[in-house]
Length: 189
Image 1: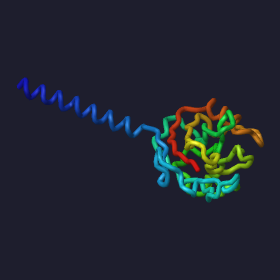
Image 2 (image 1 turned 90 degrees about the vertical axis):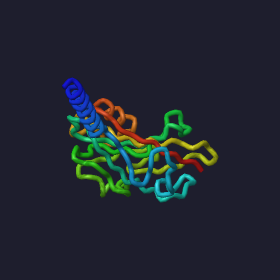
Image 3 (image 1 turned 135 degrees about the horizontal axis):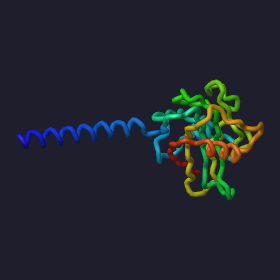
Image 4 (image 1 turned 30 degrees about the horizontal axis):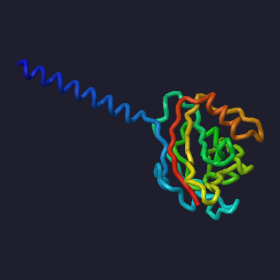
């Protein structure tokens, strides 16, 4: 009888642990891409076309899951901390993505943003325009890191002034952040 009771107690504990593990896995906020694996090298699709680079300048498809409770919108940034500027380089800034958004198709980052969800907006990048600006590190430089980050926000809409810099938008994103998910890819030439 004691063996059976201990067995049932262990089975119950194991079952509880498995359920808790599944809940934690389900709740994990993650960002991914079908075309860019974490820690991989960007392809010519995600390389800028200009400044001496000859890529296709196409924003990658992105998808996410596990948004935290209370998420009312999302923001997305692509940032290169290795750019020789002293402050890095903002390659893409998207905000006011509706809370029911779970993905962006490849090419959504055009200047017009026609494939972004209704209500979403793009901020000015360090290329001086809106829309996705692909990788274009200096020739011969070490591989640069391109950090794709999705932020879950506690507000439905960020009130961003017209022509705001990526740094100001980043400030507003972080002031309203619940959580974030990211991955890094690399590129050099």
